[in-house]
Amino acid sequence: MLTIKNLTASINDKPILRGIDLEVKPGEVHAIMGPNGSGKSTLANVLAGREDYAVTGGEVSWQGRDLLALAPEERAREGIFLAFQYPVEIPGVSNVNLLKAALNAKLKHLGREELDAYDFLALVKERMKLVQMREDFLYRAVNEGFSGGEKKRNEILQMAVLEPLLGILDETDSGLDIDALKIVADGVNTLRAPDRSFIVVTHYQRLLDYIVPDHVHVLAHGRIVKSGGKELALDLEERGYGWIAELERSTG
Ligand code: ADP
Ligand code: MG
Ligand code: MG
Image (cartoon, rainbow, N blue to C red; front, side):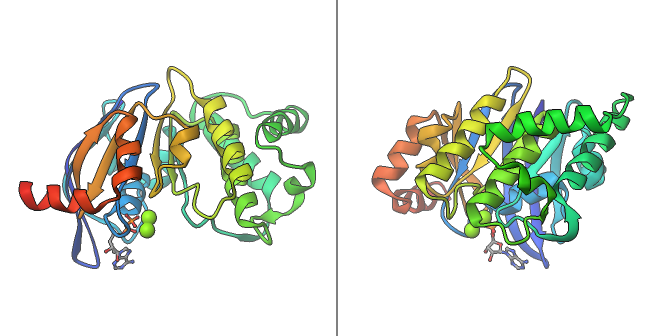
């Protein structure tokens, strides 16, 4: 589904990703962990095609296509969704209008008919229950004045409405209290499906108690230095990231 080969990327000519290999199959949840500054957000942003990130080498194929050749909005239409570490506020655009525009763009791309206002609202309201959001959030400007937890829930709502094939969550857990964390995790777990994959980026193990990954990868200095099953996250929790630095030194 997603195949990353020897991907390298820079920000302002500074090499950040130094050769990433990763294969994500349909239905899998991959966790990307690692110390601050190891390149986790860079990887997420490169996959979403955000500006400021220059891909300097390697390949990314998405459902057999060259992902790197697609513009960010094309990637979104092809089923890739990125939830930001720092969700943006969009003054003057209501949540409901953003969701509607995004969903209609996707349906159009798939050659399907747009939902009428009634069906759209019914869908959104159903998905709002998933993240326990009150209806009045629909009519507020996107993320404006939302608390940290509300922004993250709003992202999961966007994802639930858009039903991507690949959901990328970048530290969706940061700054969440345990109740909000569980709501976010429940939302993701509900969306798990045989044809839908997730890349869950997190610095902490805690989120992975609730979203149980199939694979865990540890990033350090722009490389995946260790991969394993869900137990790797527990090891990290116990031993910290210090032993990863040692591992890196010993493997170069
Ligand atoms: P992580 O998400 O793992 O904490 P990031 O991908 O955010 O790491 O950052 C990786 C490295 O890239 C860090 O050294 C960081 O300082 C650097 N970096 C991130 N954004 C920028 C930027 N806009 N300009 C210059 N360096 C950046
Ligand atoms: Mg960081
Ligand atoms: Mg980050």
